[in-house]
Length: 142
Picture 1 (cartoon, rainbow, N blue to C red):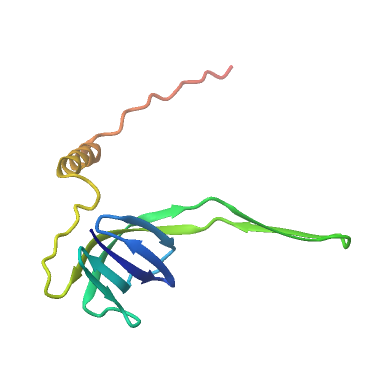
Picture 2: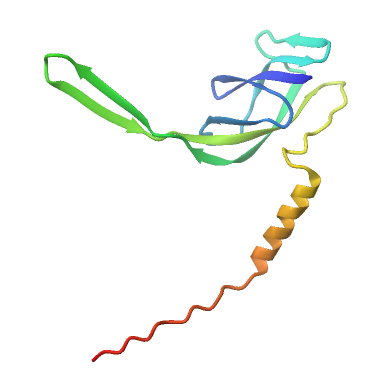
């Protein structure tokens, strides 16, 4: 099994080809630094990073997380504060993990070929479909 541990925006993730990971919102294209790589019997550890291993990432979209609530309270002093926020995550798909001098096989991005063709057919039908006509209700004043 091929997998890698990579550092992305200050957080480490253990990923393999085809995985979809949720990371804190990214403002630009993701650039991952590989910390560790394992392919069957071969294992490489970076000091601190591996220069000969590359991970190809693809941004799938953004998603809002659940609301986080932060409360502060001090007993016997009538002090209580409440704040909160909703985090935004970027969904990133791991397309391929490759090492220099090794054959690469790209993952099918999580969908089989038949499913990809079906979704493309649905998209093309919805793009060409016309909007249904809506009859306006006539109101009599009187």
